[in-house]
Length: 255
Ligand code: UGA
Ligand code: MN
Image (cartoon, rainbow, N blue to C red; front, side, top):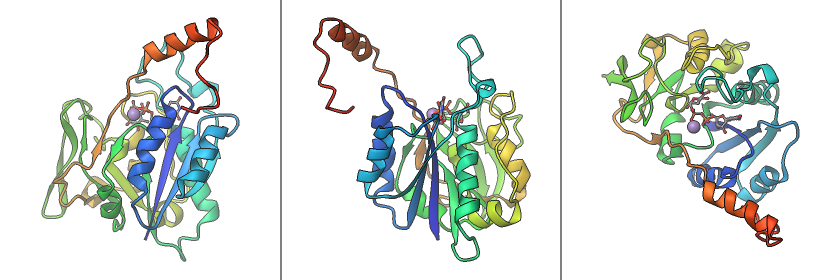
C-alpha cells in the first residue's frame, strides 16, 4: 500500500526548515507520495524547487484560505482552525487522480511543523479503516491519544479537550484510501468555530470510536511530536536593520 501524506504549508521565516525536517522523515520511506498544499494564491518557487530537488514522489497544490476562515489579529487563537481547505483539496486531488480499485493505500495529514519518526509511516501503511496512536505534546499533556487494549481503543488520555467525540490530534490518525475515496466520497474537514473540533469533524463522518484500529503497536509508542517552532525574531529584526544599512544577507542564498 502507498502512504499518501497531505501537508498544508504557508510562507513564513522558518518554512524551509520545517519542510526539511518533514522531508527527512519521509525520505527513507518506501512507496510514499507527498501531497504538499500551499496556503497561497500562487505556488511559490521555494516550495516548487524544494519538492523538485527532494527526490520524493510528490504533488504540489495550492489554495488560499478564504478570508472568512482566516484568523485575524484580534481573534482568539483557537477559534479558526488552520489548514482546512488545504487538507480538503489534497483529498479532492486523490479522489480525482487515484483509482482506489487499482491502488491501495492510506492517507495521513502531516502538518509541516511536527516531528515525525519515519517508523510511523510503515506502521500506518496497514490500516484498513481508521488507525490511531498517541502524539506527544498534545491535549495539554506529555502525550495524548487513544488508550488501547487487545487491539481495541478502550478510552482516551488527555488533559484538555476530553469533550471531543474523537479527542485526538490531526497527527494521531490515518485513514485507508478506500474509506475516503469509495465509502465516504463526500467526507471532509469542516471549519467549525469550536477549538479542537477539526479532527472530530472529519472522523465523525467516517468512523466510530469502537472501530478505530490501534497502531504503534497497541498505541504503546510515540512516533510523532506536536512540536511548534519558535520564530527567530532576532534574525528578522537584524535583517531589517541590515537592509536599512544597505548590507542585506545575500539573497541568492535561500533560507
Ligand atoms: C493544531 C493541530 O495539530 C492542527 O492539525 C490543526 O490544524 C490546528 O491545531 C488548528 O488549530 O487548526 P497547531 O500547531 O496549532 O496545530 O497548528 P499549525 O501547525 O499552526 O497549523 C496546522 C497546519 O496548517 C500546518 O501544516 C501549517 O503549515 C498549516 N497552516 C497554518 C496553513 O496552511 N495556513 C496558515 O495560515 C496557518
Ligand atoms: Mn503545529
